[in-house]
Amino acid sequence: MSPEAVRVSATGICKGFGGKAVLEGAALEVRAGEVVALVGENGAGKTTLLRICAGLIPAESGEVRVKGSIGYCPQEPGVFELLTAEEHLVLFGRALGLPRRKALAQGQSLLEGFGFPLGERGAARDLSAGTKQKLNLALALLGDPSVLLLDEPYQGFDRGTYVNFWDHVRGWRRDARAVVIVTHMLAELNRVDRIIELPLHPSRRATEHGQRAQR
Amino acid sequence: MTRHTLSRISTIAEMQGRDLGRRRFALILLVALPLAFYGSLAGHASDAIVPGGVAMAFSMAGAAIFSVLAARAADQRLVLAGFPPGELLAGRLIFLEALSLPIVAGSSALMALGSSPPRPWILVLAVAMVALVAVPFGLAVAALLPRELEATLVLIGVVGIQLSLDPSAGVAKLLPFYGPQQLLYVSLGSGYPILAAMERTLVYAAVLFAVSLYVMGRRIRVRRPPPPDVPG
Image (cartoon, rainbow over all chains, first blue to last red; front, side):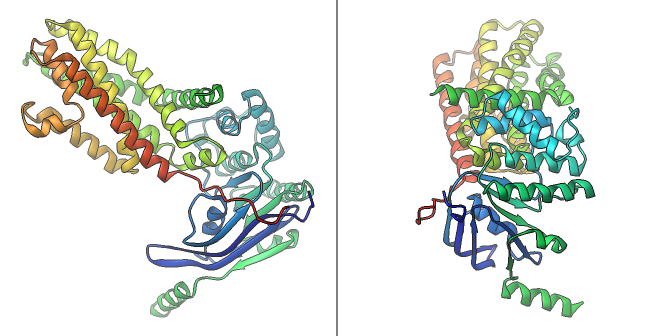
């Protein structure tokens, strides 16, 4: 397969919530071996666009096409508070068709790569925010998906892990994965291949300006 | 049903068990709640096994509601990873129904010892039927009302109304625990047809599970995008 193959293509995406438009004609294209940063103000629809690309919510109009398996890392860790990291690996591994032993081996290697304390046997609710986020990210990477949709995946990471995260991003690019990262860390944008800025929808911009004027 | 399907469902059931196993106080309440209802009435009401038996619904439906609500953040992610929504619910249903067996056995044995009903085996059957319909009832309530407060209030409302209504009232017959309630009366000597009560309970359980499958299936479904047209 050509390394430039289109993995994710979203065009003309429109979506609103509660009668308020969030996305209007949004577009995104990511190729294999490419890392794209999705940036924009709060409320610009970055998470919404990512969720639409993952198939978690439908767009009102527009078209999304994805080639390959998807690894999705939500902003808020989508984990079971009373299960341990190993139990999560077994559960998510089973969903991916991985036998227990393979899921554990692959998952532990991912966790180790992010500096997750491997002796940790506690339930997710007892983990620190950063450690829980490492589990959240490892679950998205389980099964070696070819498309990674990561919504602020480094939240709560300490400095070392954060730097290490970008080293992983380089590795994913080398492996010809298509990577989309929702980020607010503008200082790190030199580490990505392309930046897509989602503008705040004009109706929301008008509302926010109005609110500021009233203050 | 393939071996892979069974393996996925059993993994969900296993993780449900591990999750609930860490809620020790909740487990104690699961066992104690129906007995508390029974115990509060046993001294002065000859039919204390009826509220005691129906109160099993609070335990099992409550456990079912929280099994769904505790998984809210992760369920759609599991579907994206490859779990069909039906398997997630089936795993929870199987685990909770299996969990109900020792609770049913223990609480009906205690009620049989305390009240000496003329037909103790029907008492065991009746309490088992309460648990059988309570789990899909809890799954359906959680699917329809995915917030703790609302779902819990509906559970309290439905079971409470079933307990307080005269069983001959028309509304009582429409509620999910009417069949098991009649079986509890049969264990005390009433002549309600046993098979009809069981049939009603099984149909109710099947319909409630179908509702939960439909609603949850829609809520957590993943619309997997098609691949791009241009060959890559």
